[in-house]
Image 1 (cartoon, rainbow, N blue to C red):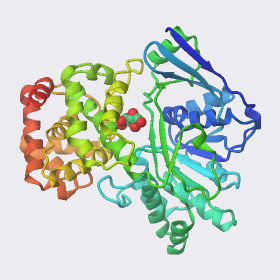
Image 2 (image 1 turned 60 degrees about the vertical axis):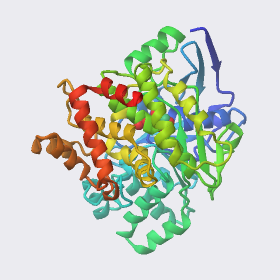
Image 3 (image 1 turned 135 degrees about the horizontal axis):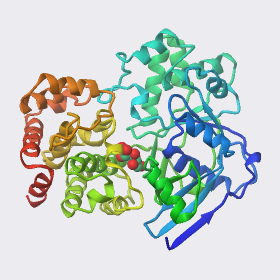
Image 4 (image 1 turned 90 degrees about the horizontal axis):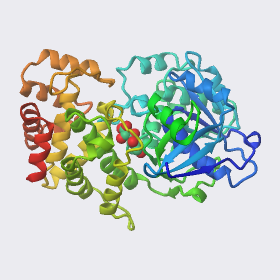
Length: 484
Ligand code: CS2
């Protein structure tokens, strides 16, 4: 390592209150929202905008280890393999693990000091049917929260119970800031909470609709899940021995709709873009960055690569991703002036080549059923409606279809981590012919909207790509596409 820039906290952590409760204390939160706040707190002496971060189901060990190290941890922000900023972070001032009993978390949410609740709980935790705008009433956890609203299990249920109690106690509602990769993520969160509320009382649902702010936001920073290997390399190369440390890229972006009735940190002083409408930024990021990521993941895994940097190092893969971004994704986007999509695309390719990150393709391949609609399918439908073809997206969809079989093209088994994994294995067990499998997967309306799935052009492109992958392999399919 040639250049290590160390940045330590300049404020006294004990002077920081916890006006923000965060749910979903994973690597992303610690490297994104907490870092913005850290940079902002570094300009102050005291503040009420520190974070109480909670996990509700998994990763109790992290909650405990952060507590044991007085909530101080490090983020290694890699510009490339030679240059890294090592940041000390103290913005998290408290951690909670709620497990089965959510009372301590709900009490914290109801306390008047809590004025913003941020969320990074992944797409599936909102229980919205991915291709539709409705709560998933087939899910046992949601049915539980409808039946027992005062002892909720789900995130929408917890938010609802806390908001109900605040209303009952005359405490103004907190602002809910969703930071997950979904289109109109604030509106979706609002939909989940209000739809759930309507099973208790329409009056409560109406109150939430009119009184609670759910600003949309776009978040961006590539933050791979930590592995023993990355932890060891941090210790070896930078001398940092911190079980809660994180490795991420240097790039970071946060665009937020400015709607915070109970106030907010002055995020704009540390580079957050506060805007009136986040949607163009969200759609751009979802289709260009996340869409490319999913292509890298499914085509890359079938091609035998393991990390993003390894896959993008292949010249055909680079050309494939460029073609997807420039010919299939960018033409579906309308951006505010000043955003140049060609430049954004070039920067993304550079970000993907950062080999310090060891960003595993299987991490991105997770939960595809929740990701495909916003990353590929909405854009594909728009492109087809305007008479353009989408061969790269179709290759991606076909690669995903192979991936969810649980077998690679050479027959090696892998685990499919997805809330709909059982449906995929049933489809593969019931149908033995490729055509019937593709047909059955396309009929999953929770993923493929009927308006897209019934288009003959889309069906044909996906089926052809599915057959070609099985027959010729990923490398040859990529080659044929980039040469065409
Ligand atoms: C990735 C994202 O795992 C995934 O699905 O595409 O986590 C991606 O790294 C982030 O959205 C980047 O901001």
